Length: 195
Figure 1: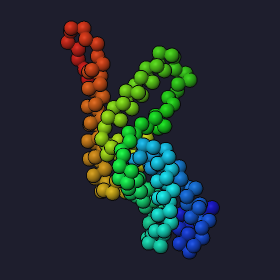
Figure 2 (figure 1 turned 135 degrees about the vertical axis):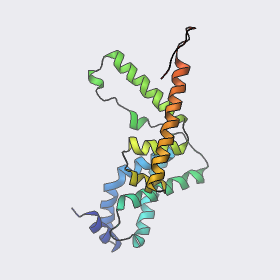
Figure 3 (figure 1 turned 180 degrees about the vertical axis):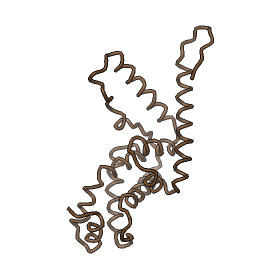
Figure 4 (figure 1 turned 45 degrees about the horizontal axis):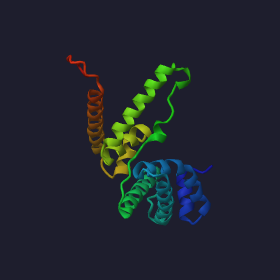
C-alpha cells in the first residue's frame, strides 16, 4: 500500500491506477462534502465525478509534499458551488443521513426514544432554517468531523475565520432552538421561564 505522496507522484507520471487508489481512498468523504453543499444525492455524485476529473487534470500543478485531502476538498467545494450557480437552484440541506440513528436506541424506553426523535427533528428543523453558510460550517465540523484546517481549506478562508463563522453559526442555531422552544411552550397564563 503506497502512501499518498507516492500515489500522487505515480499519478503525476501518468499511472492511472495510482489516481484510482486516491479516488477509492477519498470517494466517501468527497461524496459527503458534495452532498453537504448541494443537498442532493444525484447532484453530489455528479459533483464528485467532475471534481475528481478536475483534480486529475490539475495533478501536474499539485505541489509535491502538500497534503492531498485539503487540496481535494477545495476542488470539490468549488465544483459544488459552481454546480449550484449553474443550475440556479439552492436546495435545502436535510442532514437526515448524518442524523439518522440514535445511539443507544436499543436500550431506550419507548418514551426516551420518542423524546430523542423529537429532539433530533427539532435540531434538524433549526439547522435547515439556517443560511447555507451556517449549515455548511456546522455540518462540516460536527457531522463530518473536519478539522479547523480542513474547514479552512473547504471554505477558502483562514482558520481564525472558521472559528468565528462557527461561533456565529452556533449562536444563530442556539437562538433558533430557543425560539422554537418558546413557541412550543404551553401557555398556562402563568409566567414560564425559558433557558
